[in-house]
Image (cartoon, rainbow, N blue to C red; front, top):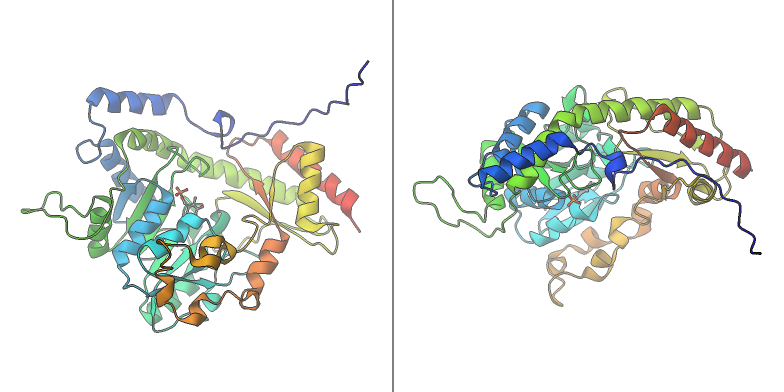
Length: 410
Ligand SMILES: *Cc1c(COP(=O)(O)O)cnc(C)c1O
């Protein structure tokens, strides 16, 4: 007889990759039916996407919002709207999604990485200031895990130097700094509706601005730069089709109704975890700047490897093996600039363009320049977070962490 191994049953946590952790349902189906029945699935003629844009702009308090095909596309629109000259520098962050970086290169500009605060994994006015030169055309800030960057200090710096700011809010729907929504501070805000974001259409994006001229360029860039509605419309400049379809617009409209609830739920459940982990040796819960309302796209723990054996990697391994909890130690594993696209400058054919236009210092990725980035990645343990987590789920996660730390304590 073959011995059957002991079967441990793990609690199933809701996941944003499937129905258990999403809020897709009847409301979305209803809107989809309306879109389908209308027979018009393009946003150039339909009004789902138009309604989405109007409502989203109202919700976050901004003059213009335009829907597009992805969060990466949103950042691409933002960079294109600012229209850098080839070789211009755009300061960005070393810890973000690649979708926030490649658009810079597609528009012929050079991403210049600012270091981050290892405690929040966000860029700061100081780390940005250290990289400003007379070639700086824009600054992109990412509100990582839904925690706003210090927009007071960053906007003061940017305004004093006359440099536009793009906010990457893909992880930060409805997050606020001093009571004001992210995506309304800078020149352009960028949002993602990808499967794993707060609300989703599978793929999709939104851009926001208060600036009339930038709004015009954003609209054009999404629409092959064709001047819809102009007396003599033409294709005015280089641009692809980055439109959202009416099908996604319909789902997004239904999802918008659920957004505040999703955020409220994530904030309440994350606060409970923080409370339960208070005082646990070797574990630091997220920094809570009282000026910020953060929206917990993920829950980022800091793990002190001098107290918890194996640090974030050791803790993640225990959580997975003993409780079936999947987490991401080191988040994106390595700083963005250590990915092949930057290390080998893989762009268009063998040209390496636009890196060929860069000042050597702008593309010097010596680790000594990025102490915050390396320290931050070393100790971060990213716990997936979800609006459907109940008290029981949070208790399960808390107990798992407490038990694991207990075993790993040195
Ligand atoms: C998800 C994400 C993007 C890219 O969005 P997509 O919709 O996946 O293209 C860009 N920036 C950040 C910070 C993200 O989290």
